[in-house]
Structure formats: structure tokens, C-alpha cells
Image (spheres, rainbow over the protein chains, first blue to last red):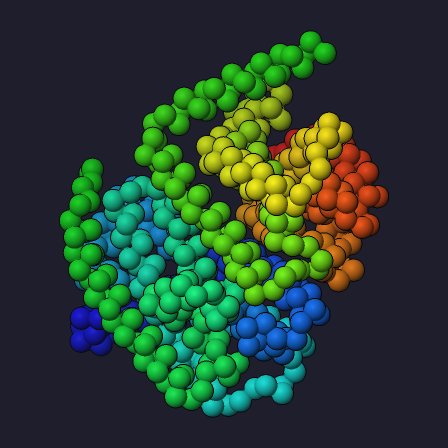
Length: 272
Length: 266
């Protein structure tokens, strides 16, 4: 967050990274498609679980079947965009020593990562949007859509990606200390899936857990954009939660900068 | 028959070597214990949260769902620990590492199955047993010798079916000519569906999971039969049949695949 000024000047270089990320996404599309399908299966499973639940009762914790039908698919959209975790590849580069090439570039390391992922995310968004948009319309039709909410949703979705990136960045820095990138990635994936509302609306969490979730940054990734889109948040609430997302990005970004300075110091490498 | 004795001996020898190689990564192992506990805890927590809002899903209570989960997790752990090599096939074909196996006087299938070991599987199996113990305790199932035997057979067959699923999906690589094969990941993600009773899905999905990718026989039918659920009796009889069928297909796929194999190296 501190390097915004420098970022402006280096925008041209970053644009190259966006392009690079986009091409990378095209080249590794099978990885992305598998990931998306896995997520999609989860969404379908949840869809039918909720469907069977709602045949017995009309309202679960304030959620009706009409709202739930939307939630499942919108959550899937939010989860699929920016789905690629980069911890694994960073860990690989640390082990091989290639990481030094990234750190030596005349660009911020984090900025480079971010813009590369942004390029990939653009591709992911397009692909997921086509798939899920058609499923969503087939299931729900046009009746719940509202221009204002959709615009806010897109902003919130983008900020959610920012939150997710900051969290991933912090976890990826852990790889400088441990080579077990698989464990780190898994832990991060599970934490975000569980606490972001990817699997179940956070409003359904019982008492204490709900309070815990409220003070964590994860809800900004999926729950916030989803609630804005399906209209469980009022206009005021939407604004507040978008503001909260921005605050979290700032806090996590700062943490990343501080932790990054420490983490880059620990690597020692052969050759060079 | 004597030949099989030798194979089993070889299998044990290979696995012991694998275990030795793991002693290198002791902290890694401890971290994985922690992460596995954590992730399985979260998964079970999710089920608890859903059930804290509602009494049942498709006529199944939370403890019954735990049993489905236990069956799935146990079979997953079983693959990870005993036959993790099934996952490596795609990579081995891709990198032409398979050539090394072809020149050894040991069956390729055996070498492939023992190509890797994942201690995480042990954690998973232990967690699964704990989950099932709690689940069966809460369901108030009356145990007798017959039921216990049936349970053990079902669990073993579920494991075999699942190993075969991964095996077949991985072996498709033989025909993909260097393209990246992610079918095995796809198959494992489909397991998500088997965490809930089959009855909640529409007929088309039930058909796919009943016959095409037989996940129904890994969790739904065995657990349903043990709990005496309606409409699972016929399916329970089919478990053994599918188990044998999957084994046969696996053998065939490997045989055909090897005949079709062209190394990407020289």
C-alpha cells in the first residue's frame, strides 16, 4: 500500500505483467478448469443439500429458498475468480533459488505478483461468468437483478479479490520459513473457504463463531459481495461493508510489507 | 499362488523403503498432522453448522451423515497411505519416468502402486475411525457379529473401489499423449457428492454416481444398509459386484495402456 506512488510510474511495466498473467492463464487452462469444476461440484452439492432442506421448512435462519438459490451460485462466482493460489509456485521458486530473480527486478515484488494474478483473474472471471451466469439465469431468471446492487457487487468483488490477495501474500511469506507449501496452501484454502462464506452463509453460524467471523477479514472475500448482490444488505450496510473491506486491505497490506521485509531477509541461496 | 506371496513381500519391502525416506521430513510430518486435523475439523464443523439450523437432510440426521463422511475419509486415507502411487502415474507417464519401471523384472502395476507413500493417509484413517465410532455410538446401532463382518467387508470394498477410480482416471494418461491429465483430481472432487445421501440428488446424478463413477457404493449404500435405510438393500448387494468390476477394468486399463505406451523420452 505504501508503494502506490511508485506503482503509478511503473504502470507500463505492470501492464506487461497483466498480459503475462493472462497468457499464463491461457497456457495452464486445464489447471484452472479442473479447479473450477471442483468448486462447481461443491456448489451443485450445496444446491441440492439446501434444496432438500427447504422441502421440509420454508425459512432457515432468515434465508428462504429463493435467496439461497442465488447465494450458492454467486458465492461460487466469487470463489472461482482469483482461485489460483500462488504459495506453491513461490515455494518452488524458493527451493530452486529462482526467487532471487523476482526480488532483483526493479519492481515491487508484491506488485508484480498482484498484476500477474490480475491478468489470470480476468480470464477466470470471463470463463466463470459465462458458466455461472447461464446457470444462474436458468435457475433464478432475471427477476432479482438490480443495476445498483450489481454495480456495488462488482466493486465489492474486486475489493474481495484484494483481501484474498493480501491473505495469500501473507501465507506465501510463510513459505520462506517452511518448505511445506502444500500444508500452507491447504491451511489457507480451508481457512478462507470456511470463514469467507464460500460454503454456507455466515449468518447461519451459531453464536460465538458468528462473532469470531465478524472480526476476521475473510468475510470480505465472498460473504460481503454475495450479500450485496442478493440484497440481504441494505444500501447503508453495503457501503459500510465495502468500507470495511478497504480497511482490511490496508491493514493486511501493511502487515504484508512489514512481514515481507523480515521474510526476504531469511533466504540464503546457493549459486547466483 | 506362490507368485502372489512374492508380490506381497515385494510390496512390503517397497513400502518400508518409502517409510524410511520419510524420516527425512520429520517436521513436515508433524505439520501435516496438524493441517489434516485442522482441515477435517473444519469439514465436520461445516456439517455441524448446517445441522445447527435444521433437523435433517433428506431424512438423514447429523450422526448418520458423519458415517458417510467416515467411509469417504477412510477410503481416502487408505489410498494415501497404501497406494498413493496411483496418483503419480500421470506424472510418470508425462515425464517418461515409467521407462525405468518397464525394464525391471517386477510387475509394473506393483511398482506404480508403491511409487509413493503419504503419511497423511494414516491421520485420515485414524480421524475417520474416530468419526465413525462417534457416529455409530450416536445412531444407536445394535451390533452383532454379522453386522461387524459386513461393516468390515464394506469398508474394504469401498477402499478398493476408490483406489480403482483413481487408478483408472490416472491411467487415461496413456492415451492422452503428453497432455496434462487432471481427471484424477476431477474424480476425487466428485467425492464431495458422496458426503450427503444420494437421495437428495435428481435421478440423472443418481445414475452417474450409481453406475458411471460408483461413489454411491463407497458411502451411501454401505452406510444405508448398516443403518437399515429404505432402498439401499439392493445397492448393498451390488457393492461386491462393482468392486470386482472396477478391479477388472483397472487391470485391463493398465494392460492396454502399457501396450499403447510410447515413451516421450528416448
